[in-house]
Length: 409
Ligand SMILES: Cc1ncc(COP(=O)(O)O)c(C=O)c1O
Image (cartoon, rainbow, N blue to C red; front, side, top):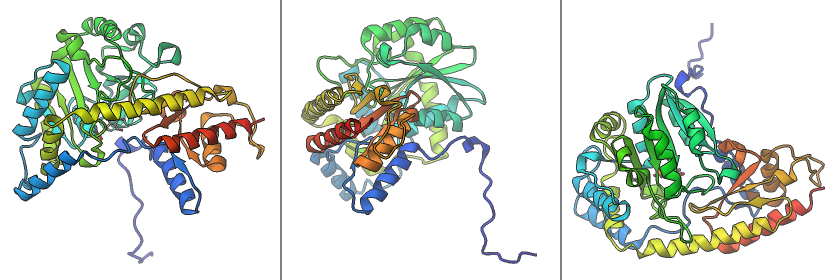
């Protein structure tokens, strides 16, 4: 008989997470970190966060909140003061009016999406998502018992969902359609005209609700005008959850504040989920978020200009490399470039590149650049670059990618 009680018993995982693996992005990050520890000068273009610092006025507001003793539990899904600031933001920037009980605040947009899915999905309910997509969507849908219905958004369609494809994807079991504009991973954004086409489809299917993930709203370039569905088609507002957050626009990824506006019954159901998981988001971060939303906004335009210059540097640089091609995205801080032109070619080490994963491994292993293969996001052969890093780093990375491709035979 085994009497060794120090041995941990085998863990039986819940079936709801059985299909969910640790993200490939984290694996690439870990490999890049390992190479760095070995002394290699690896440039990591994988991170989904701005390299800028949180604005000083926001930090100061957090310090004041601590000193004033705002360190206790708050109302479950956001203080009234923060909800008022969010209501002003929706009004000012999107022409949308939401009452306090139509607004929810969570620990990041991620928690807000998770709450909405957990609050509404029953086993086998369907959620329509355009491919390529932010991988967390599919995992969160699976945890909530739902089924992801993928709609291809090809490069020819600007990585956007065509209205006819949306129509085909909708069934009697569809609960949600997720729209992410500008998108992670492609940077593609939906124009008002395109949203109107999608709205026509959704108006024909009143049982379908819409989640608009607008987290990259402020990272939009040139004269492209950001629009969100509830604003473009008010008849859909009563079944739309308009999601946003502080992470990307105000460089506040670590503060964990995301929010959404939506119909009161949905917001109430989401509060039930949050009440038995994390309760209120951090009181100090909420105070800081009020300052971010109500304080001076000039930083947004400044950072947008900087991101736009980086986008152009990366897109032009990639398109100058024979074998790669890259669409110029409207927003976010990602490019999604095709590496179809190098598939089947051989590395100096003799390896044939069959997939975008092979290509990305070659870039990391032999040329010290970490990027994420399109396979991770559901559309291959592509690779995603996050250009939320300095122009000098981007320039060096492009030179390395150029050299890597030139060495293929
Ligand atoms: C498309 C998209 N939505 C939501 C989020 C979540 O942001 P947060 O939870 O930091 O607010 C991210 C983060 O990478 C994202 O890329």
